[in-house]
Image (cartoon, rainbow, N blue to C red; front, side):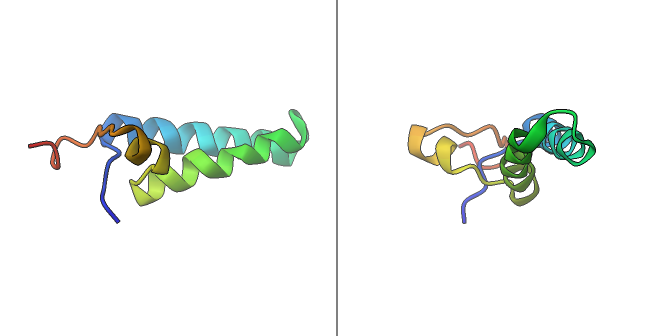
Length: 64
């Protein structure tokens, strides 16, 4: 699995994912909040399949 999610992108994904999940748990935004699992997982694993398909990379360590 090739890393393609960098520092600030990773932090943003984790924060947004957690906020969406917490809002779903509290019942404020409904079941759609569980979509927060996607950005949370991509932030934790530092790999985004969409970035791979589009040839994008925000990780400075792997850009050469």
